[in-house]
Image 1 (tube, one colour):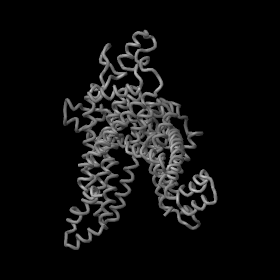
Image 2 (cartoon, rainbow over the protein chains, first blue to last red):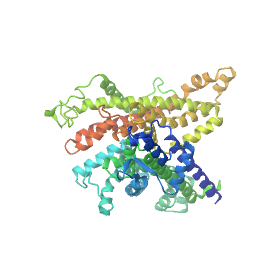
Image 3 (cartoon, helix red, strand yellow):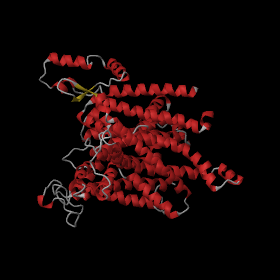
Image 4 (cartoon, rainbow over the protein chains, first blue to last red):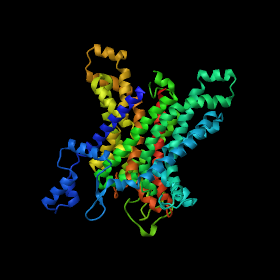
Length: 319
Length: 271
C-alpha cells in the first residue's frame, strides 16, 4: 500500500512536469497568435480584446496555471483554426469529442489482435523443435519488423482492399451510423498496426520461454512427474509472461504512436489525424491538448503496468 | 575485440548487410549527380507505364520515371538520416562520455531526462519539435537529431562507466594525461564497435522516422522526392499503378533490412 501511495505521488509529479514542459515549450514559438487569427488589418482595439479573451496578457507561468486549471475543469480552450461560425470559436472539446472513440477502438482492436496472435505464436515457436519452422519464423518476423507502418498500411490496402476486395479503401463508416461496419473497416488498419508488434512480441515471448526452460524449477517439475503440457503452461509460460507484460506496456505506447500514422493511411477521422493536421497548420491549442492527452495515456499505462507487475510477481515487492 | 583480425572470417550477416547497404548508398550517392531520366520531365504518352526494360520501376501519374525518382528519394532519405545520426550521435557521445566518466549531478539529471524521453514514441516527440520549429528540411533534421540523442547517451554512458576504472585508464591518469585526452583519445576508440551497432540501429530509426514524417507531409516537401512523400503520392493510384507505391516502399524495407543485418553482423563479428 505504501508503495502504491509513493507511486501515485510520482505519477502526479510526472504529469505536472510533463504538462508544464508541454505548455512552456509552445511559448517559445515566434509569431503572434492574434495577428495570425485576425490578419494584419485588424484594429488595435480588436487585437487587444482578443488578447484579453485568450488570456495572452499574463506571463507564461501564470498562463500555465490558468490553462491547467481550465483543463482540469474540462475546458480545453479554443482552436485557432477551426471555428463554429463567424463569431464563435471552436472549443477543442468538441473538436476532439467524436474523434476520440475512433482512436480508442483502433487501439483496442490492435491490442486484441496482438495478444490473440503473438502469445500462441510465441508459445508454439518456443515448443517447436523443427529447424525449418524456426528459420521461417525468424526470417518472417525480422522482415515484418523492417516494414514501416505506413507502407504496411498501403500493402494491406492493396492486398485486402484492391486484390481481395474485402473492404473498400477510403470507405470509412462512422461508428454512429453502423457500428459493426465501423469495426469491420477498422480491422484492417488495426492489422497494419498489429503485424510488426506481433512479430516483436512473439520473438520476445519465445526468447523469454527458452530462457525459462533452462531454469532449475523446470527440471524439478519434470522430476516431480509433471507432464510436459503442465510444465509448459503451468510453469514456463507463467514465468515467461512477466517480462512480456512490461513489453506489452511499451507496445501500447507504440500503438498510440502507430495510430497517428495509420489513421492517415486509412483516412480514419481519429485524433492522430487531427494531430497531424494541427501540427501542419500550427493550431497550437489543439496540438497542446493532444500531446498532453497522449502523454497522459502513455504515463498512465506505464503506471498500471508497474502495479500489475507487482501483483503477478510477488518476488518484486519483497525486495 | 578486433573486428577484422587477419584470417577472421566475415559472418553472413555482415556480408549480406554490407552488400545491401552498399548498393543502397551507391545508388543514393549516384542519384545526387545522375539519374537515368530527368526526375521532373513529364510525358503524357507514358503515364502509368508498367515496369519494363525502359522504365525499370514503371512511370507515375505524370509519366515520370519512378526509378529515377526513387534514386533521388534515396539520396534525400540517406542524406537526411546521415545528418540526423551525425547530430544525435555526436551529442550522444559527448553527453554519454561526460555523464559516464564524471557521474555526479549532471549524470543524475541527464539520466532522468533520458529515461523519460526513451519511454515515449519518437514520432510523438518529433511532432512536438516540428510544431515548435515549423516545417522544412533543416527543421526535420534538427528535430529528429534532438529526439534521438537519448538513445545514444544511454549506450555511450554505459561503456564509459565500464571503462572508467579499467587498468589502462588508471595508468593514463597516473601518468598525468589530461581528462579530455582520456575521454576522447583513450576511451573513445575502445567503444567504437558498440557505438557502431547503435549507429546502425540509429540510422534505421532515422530512415523510418524521416520517411514517416515525409509521408505525413511534415517532412520533405513536394517538389523534392523523398521515399516517404512518393509513397503518399502513390497511395492515390494504388489501383491504376501498384508499382508506384511498391517501388519506394520496398526500397525503404531494403535499406532498413540492410542496416539491421549490418548492425547484427558487427555485433557477431565482435564475439
